[in-house]
Image 1 (tube, rainbow, N blue to C red):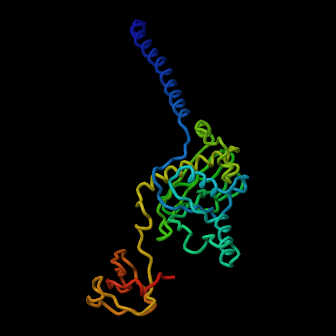
Image 2 (image 1 turned 90 degrees about the vertical axis):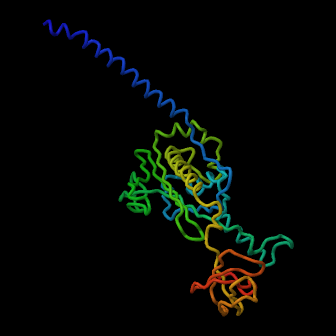
Image 3 (image 1 turned 45 degrees about the vertical axis):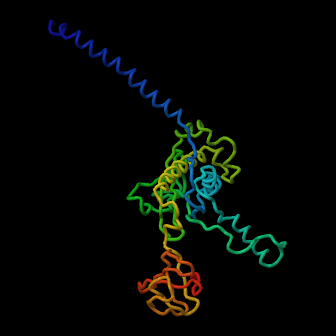
Length: 318
């Protein structure tokens, strides 16, 4: 009995410590929730443009089952508000522009309309927004099973998709360099129903910008908001990856090839009086290095010979 009484103060002290720690843990959890609530979902902005970007929709129209607009329209809103790219239209706007150009070519437009060839801005990159999924069941509560088990280049990442029941979305943005066809960036985004307070807190869904841009259903439906936040996360990560890429996609790629239009010669230097490297026949393919002196261009042929050729003798390869 004495032994128990002697230990009683020590045990009482331990109990006090446990009682005191519980409120501290609870307070820490509340603080984390408050910090989360203070954060705002914002579209990232850039002080410079990373090039011209075309956004195209994926092949599988999974969004139709949710009453949503194409994710192409949603990403275009992000691009327009971020100022990170020059947005070029390769969809309905491009189709309408081609029709207008056909009118110009047929002589139907007024004189001096200034519509003709050589005016369309080239896209540096093509971006495709899609779902990522490893689910075999493409119906019911899961969408995107037809997209395959694993995405190339994601190093075995387990992929999700969209779950109506759980209100979750896993999406991916892939960017391809138009000139090289190289996939230069891939970013994933994940969101759940619990993230919606974060989006609303930042006013992301206010103002009707999504609907005005053709991204219907993304601001006024729960599943649409979840998908929006997933794409926003992916787009934010994508912008970070672009900050590590060359400033000029055009300059970073090899020059467009040319073909000889007339017979000529390749010289050792930029002077036609210098030593001849070889003769060139019409139709031969050459690859400019980017070096120029007046009318003379430095080029390489398909055999690895390098030299200078007059630019009046060749044309862009078709």
